[in-house]
Amino acid sequence: MTIAAGRFGVAPPPEGVERLPAAPVEPKKSRLDVKQVEAGLLNIGYAEFGPPDGAVVVLLHGWPYDIHSYADVGPLLAERGYRVIVPFLRGYGSTRFLADSTCRNGQQSVFALDAIRLMDALHIKRAVVGGFDWGSRTAAIMAALWPDRVKALALVSGYLIVNLAANEQPLTPQGELGWWYQYYFATERGRAGYTKYRYDFNKLIWQNASPLWAFDAATFDRTAKSFDNPDHVAVVIHNYRWRLGLAKSEARYDELEGTLARSPSIGVPTITIASDFDGAAADGAAYAKRFSGKYSHRVLKGIGHNVPQEAPRAFADAIVDVDRYDVRAAQD
Image (tube, rainbow, N blue to C red):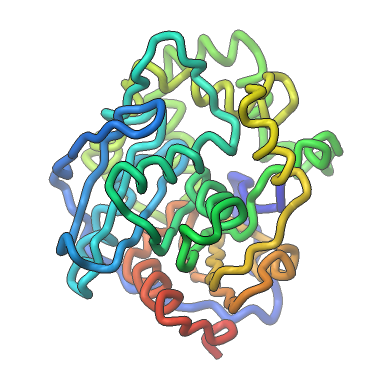
């Protein structure tokens, strides 16, 4: 199921991998100011930090998270002069489809196209792009398909571009166990359960994916409001069913998906970030060769899946370093 990252469990750290400390930041409790702009098929809600003439950073969240994963990263980068754009993905927060007739599509290429269209709408020619979970995959796809629009990348859990053919191959029983929610979503019972219990469901995912992160109710509730988006369930269900070959692609994206099916290498400067969430894959060896440009890999100690919210300084430092092409191997 795409490189080993993404299992909701914690494995012992791999031998011989340097663990970098992640300095804590007191999390922000307030809601972010959200702007709206029409871009492609969507009216996209986004938060913005920093000076309007600063070098641009686009930060992308995943499931089941939202723009508040970057509530601390945004100000840290703004202090360094960056203009930071953090959009709600389709199906989250205040982002809405412009037409009722548009397919609530969750296949991988559409999120990258949404981000490119957002950049177009905001007259952004080129940006450093960072992300985790779905956001990491989306950022990598942007660099693979539109390298002229991406200056550099900071990716949590490495190279996550989905290869549908590879996804047909079974994992070990222990590996399959980590994907329980995907198989649940493959059923109509799963759709109904997620619709009814999405608050409790997503809180469980947070706890399992970041077992050492002592987030409070206010922190989760702030993000949970984004799951009330009327298209949230449809987009999430389509995303996971599509990955398993149970939901169709839209023909208009076939060319993009054809390119991604070949697992293209990424040539822009990249820093990948692993954490305890990645288990035995934390050393990054499985995907290092996917990056043909300047490249470095970092491993954070005691951090779960939501790296930008759990370790905002470390994530912000990776953005700044990769923008400066400062990619010292494993910071040794």
